[in-house]
Length: 247
Image 1 (cartoon, rainbow, N blue to C red):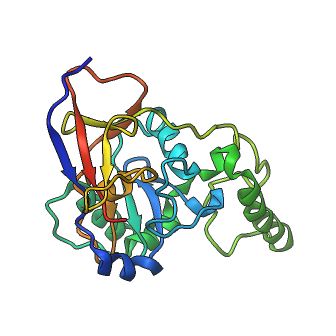
Image 2: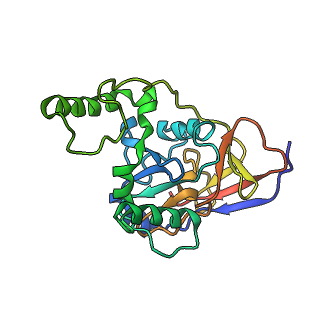
């Protein structure tokens, strides 16, 4: 077992005014290295910043299942749709997003680039099957009627064999969320998640705060770091004792 440090993170760079302003902004979990994302709406959750932050939300569980397998070692962020990225940034993940958007022909308009060139891998999860099947049905109807699609095939399906390989994964939370770059981790069973008045927050997972990038939000403290999940304590890493969030 690793030693436990007196480590505290204040994930609250966002205040009440920020929360009000971002009520209309929609977010996805985005993997800039695999060029993939998951959309909370596919799991019948809201896409706004706070709507799938509950520790038992299925989109977060789906994220965990990707982080322990297909997305292991990749750079991931909780990305808002009203947030153009700057041409110059010291953050590696933001720099990569800008370069990708410029190459695609949308310099800085990164959310459009993601929606039109990344794959939405929510379709891999059985928990998203109902909504994804409905979306694919629209694609198939259009394809059969016109022989083409007028919009991007976001799930990256083979239109002649559309459901092959889909809905096979199960969303599952792991006990520990690990920052491999900083060699720290938190556990919702051990780390105190606190409001700014120091009272306990028993329902929020702080990862969206730590990995968030939105229109008026300062970048999360872990933005650009390599994160992962596990049920085993990482040797040589320190447990975060407290994380503060605005909620």
